Image 1 (cartoon, rainbow over the protein chains, first blue to last red):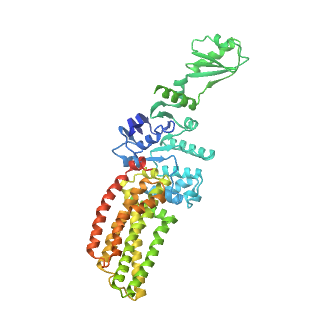
Image 2 (cartoon, each protein chain N blue to C red; image 1 turned 90 degrees about the horizontal axis):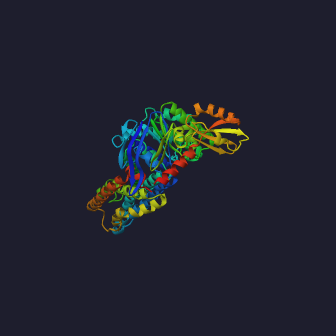
Image 3 (cartoon, chains in turn red, brown; image 1 turned 135 degrees about the vertical axis):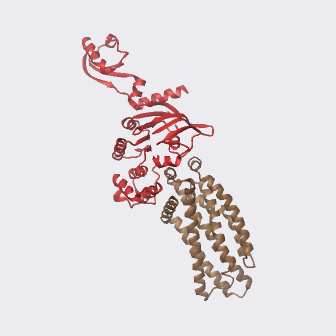
Length: 305
Length: 238
């Protein structure tokens, strides 16, 4: 649904996006993560055919960037970081305006549908400026979805939302995903990215890493099993002489054991510990957070430049 | 054409809900109609031909200031308002073309300016006729009509182009309004000649002013269209 090859954007001497290669499939929720000023917004603006790349090429929703920009804008929806609503106009007028710009066959029905979906129908005639932050964000999301875009670019969709509204937005993203919509999600909320995204890209002017969150974690940290043991005696980690164990670390009352295939190796690991006299309380997988991964990869990237 | 009309309607809906814009579009015209009626009435009642001519010419000048002043209020809030509300990016994310957007914004200012000006001129003629029992000589002449119907659109176009250029660089509506007010002066200063003349406005004078405005508007319009490109708006506008 989105492909980019060598996509680059310069502003004078500043390279905002440097030779970006991307492939995002239909129906995928793709997280685009990076610090402020990393070039995420510039990337979205290029892919949404709002600004031209300095070099490189891209295809969005089957349309080639630079050759079919109007068609691309017809097929994508963009939620900007700020809701960007006409404050003096009512919610209805805001949406009708955009529905007509997209030349929808029945703008009124579509607007009604989305106002009802986001629980804004009863307050449709009130100026958008009188809405709460959460309501404005919902209205902005409704606007981005009005024309049923094939690709949706969401920039911080849950920022400034209360937990209930944020959950509603996350549920909506999952619903859209189930309807085969492609979602390009820029967020600083790494927990959200971890929960929602099929794949994430870590980006800071250039692509640092891309893949499924779990796969990236395994690549970075390997797979580790935590074994909690009663009365962990000294030297137990040294006695753990199994060939598939690639590393053992003592953390508080637990052993953190690096394995290549925990699903297969965990039973043998527990058997060996019991043989060594350890009282195993429970075993779980050490799951590094996406935040840990993000921070470590960004640090590595900084160190390498 | 469809999207152009959609933009026009949205612009007017917003303008109608903006008290500052409404004040600029309605108050000054009403004031100038009143002043013009008074001046022509005074002119019609005086025996001094020079005083009469100066009063008539000044009245005409007022109806040429309106099409330059009215678009300022609408255009400034139309553009600075988009910036202020962060609505430019969502708007530019739609399939609307740069030209449709530019024309929508420009016409949203020019059309009401001309409509208000010509309505005010009609009201001025009607009120003056009623008060004086008919129009004084030298008021509804060919140079007057040429000025009202020929120069007014050019003055509006000139003012809108200036305002769009100024507003693209401004983030504060009041500052943009003030700068634009000064920036349109070169276009309206020749009109002051109208009121200072001791002879009636003639077609030569109207023709010279029209030619100057035509050239100036064409140049400014070309610049404004260049500034009004999607990429420029997103990356350069403050």
